[in-house]
Image 1 (tube, helix red, strand yellow):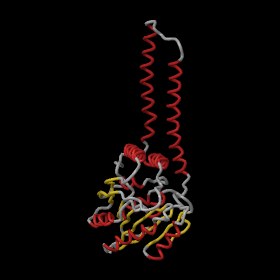
Image 2 (cartoon, one colour):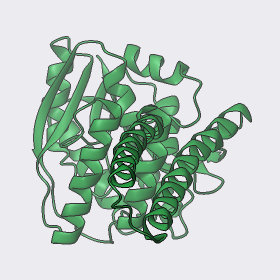
Image 3 (spheres, helix red, strand yellow):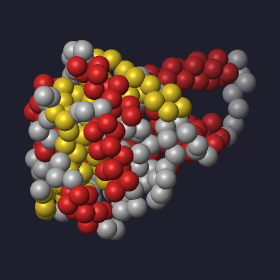
Image 4 (tube, one colour):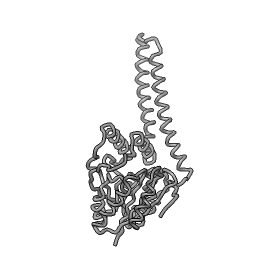
Amino acid sequence: MSVLSVVVPAYNEEQMLLKAAAAIAGVLKENAIEYEIVFVDDGSADGTWAQIQKAAEADTLIHGVRFSRNFGKEAAIFAGLGAATGDCVAVMDCDLQHPPQTLIEMYRLWEQGFEVIEAVKKSRGKESLFHRLCAKAFYLLMSDASSVDMTRASDFKLLDRRAVSVLLEMPEQGAFFRALSFWIGFRQVSVEFDVQEREAGVSKWSTRSLIRYALVNIASYSSKPLLVSTWTGVICLLAGLALGIQTLVRYLTGNAVAGFTTVILLILIMGSLVMINLGIIGYYIARIYEEVKGRPRYIISQKF
């Protein structure tokens, strides 16, 4: 019988981990699905690892991977994919906002021959207006930069073993799981789910972390921001030509205005655009620097 591996990244999820383990295992047992659950402790500062060990004592089909420090969710996902041994592998959050019941629908679609099953958000649950607007802006930006519709996307996916093997063979350090799982192709389908309310603990995604997440993954997956330099250069050229023609006409008609206001404003605008473009280019150079060093995505300190 086919085995479903469930990869669950966990960062400071001491309060939710046992609930997540029980909920996931319970749903899979009820539907007679052979399973294993791989929890990845992403360098938590609380008792997450102790809770993983406790869950494993109660269920021998639960395994744990512990990082030497916090390497981020993307690294935790890929570490879990590498540790999983099932015929298909699902990735979901530890806070149970990804409902375990959806795993059954995803698994049945995999049995029908689909190789990448993505769970998309039907609703986002309860969020503050500010966080909702920031999240919407983030996903629109990600969608435009990656050419993938990310407006309802999530890391809640189920992949066939072939798809998992392809992802693990990719050598890039800054891998973006959510977009790469779409990019690899294979036979894909999506299912909808309602985001559940967190029962305990707090969300690890602040507005600041969303912005950082967006910058890192846009640079990792897309080169479109580099086109900003080209387009701002074209806009500045057109604006400069228009202003030059206007100045020449005023000079020839004897209506030239004395003063340096226009010159000062132009210098400030041009200087700002140059610095912004240098910042974008510099960020990409930094990402290249990180890649060429060839450091591992993560370091595992314990595993069972």
